[in-house]
Length: 139
Ligand code: AMP
Ligand code: ZN
Image (cartoon, rainbow, N blue to C red; front, side, top):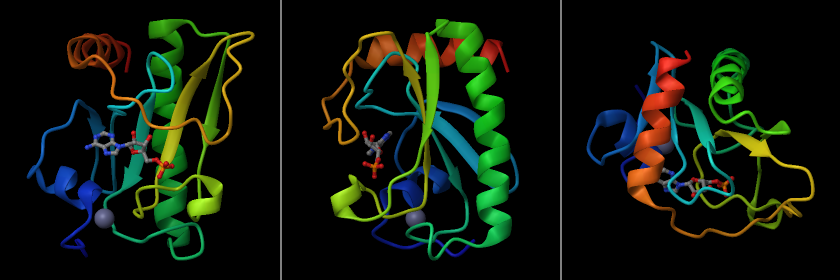
């Protein structure tokens, strides 16, 4: 489905690189962010490759938001954060680093001081995998 050869998220969709997959349907895929800004940080992508909010189709963005709602509920049950941001970045100045449209499901805590451009710091893969299993159990 319209994959772009050099796109890391298209490779995740194709199963060419590994991911901690949470949920998949015909139009979307959800998986754990491997540089989590907080415990339970997940990503939701449309399977159709487009780079940003300007390019994504109305159907693809709608499907992505519907899946993000599902994932947000499971993340809420799993890590019981103080809150959750659904964040979506367009362009480098806005902090976009992967140019395949995506939505962050980002658990927040009181006083976590998280900045909009939070930076990428590799997480503990065992801990991310364990959380992924727990979130899937709450879907
Ligand atoms: P953005 O900065 O909004 O473009 O977000 C891209 C996100 O993708 C970042 O939070 C990265 O940590 C995340 N990311 C990049 N590569 C991978 C990967 N292979 N698996 C999971 N998350 C990734
Ligand atoms: Zn892509």
